[in-house]
Amino acid sequence: TLLGCFALHLRHLWVISTDPAVSLVYNYHKSSHRHRHHHHYLYDKVFATSLRIKTELLYDITKNVFLGAMIIGIVCWCNVLQAVLSDECPVFVFVLWCCCVTSALVSSVVVFPICILQKSKVNIEEFAPTLMLPLVTLMVTSSMGHNIFVNMSSVELKLCCLIVSFIMWCVGVSMCFMILAVWTYRCFVFKLPVHERSTVFLCFVPIGFLGQGAHCIQLFGLYTQWYFTLEKTAPSHSDILRGLIFRNIALFTGLVLQGLGFYLTIVAFCVLIAFRSLHDTNKKRNTLNFHDFGWWSSTYPCGTMSVGCYASYMLTGWEFERILSVVYAGILFTVVILCLVAFLIGLGKRLRCIFLRIMSDRD
Image (tube, rainbow, N blue to C red; front, side, top):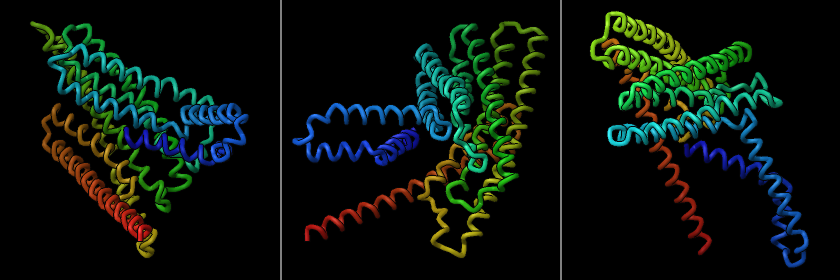
C-alpha cells in the first residue's frame, strides 16, 4: 500500500514538475508584489492541471495499476483484523469485508472496463502483466470472504459469503487468464525481457494470481463441504456426497493453478539467471541487488504460492505440499529480510552523504 501510494504521488509530482504551470507559479511567488492580478489565473491553471493528472492516473490503463496494490494492502490489513476480532465482533468483520468487496469491484469491474473503452496507450511490445493487479483484488477479497465464513452467525450469511466469494473468484481468474494470454503472446513475439532491468521482474507477477486463485478455490471447496455436512445436525448421504464433490473439484482446480504457478516460478528464476549471466561482464549494468525495488514484486507471488500449497495440504494431507509451502515461505522471508537490510544500508549511506555535505558547507 505504501509503495502504491508513493508511486501515485511520485508520478503526480513528476508530471506537475514538467508542466508549464509550475514555472508560472514559481515566477508568481518570486515577484508576487508585481503580479497580484495573475493570482486567479494561476490558481485555475494549476487546479486544472492537477485535476487532469488525477483523472489520467485513474483512467489510464498504464498508470492506474497502483489501485490494485493499494486495495490488496487494505484487504491484508482487514485480514489481520479479521483474525483478531472475528470471535468478538463478527458483524464488524462482515462490514469490513463488504467494504473490501466494494473497493475491489470499483477497481476491477468499474475502472478496468472504463480503461478498455478509453483510447489505449499500451503498445504490445511494452505490454506488462501488472494490469492484473486491479483484478487480483477480487481473489484476495474472495479469500477473506471464505475466512470469515466460520464466524458468521446465520446460515444465510454463510451462504452469501460462499456465493459472492466464488463469483468474485470466477471473474478474477477469467480476466487474469486473458491478460496472461496476451503476456504470453508478447513473450513469444518479442521474447522474454532478459535484456532490460526494469522488466526482468515482471515474470513474477502472473504467479501471484495463480497462487491466490488456488488458495481461494480450495478454501471454497473446504467450506462448502463444511456447509453441507457440519451445518446440519443430521446430514444425509446426498449432502455428504455433494460436499465431497465440491471439495474434490476445488482441489483439482487448485492443483491445476498451482502447477502453472510452479512452471512460471521456474521461468521467472531462469529469466533472473539469464539477466545476470548476460550482464556479468559489465559490473555497472549488473544491478540485480536487493536494494532494487523490483525484488519486492517477487514477495507477493511467493506468499500466495505458499498459502496455496498449504491449502492443498489441509485438504489432502500430502506432505510434499507442506514442504513446497515451507520452501515458498522461506524464499519470501529471505527476500524480505535481504531487501530490508539493503534498504537500511542504502539509507545509512545517503544519510552519511547528507551529513558530510552539511559539515563541509559549514567549514
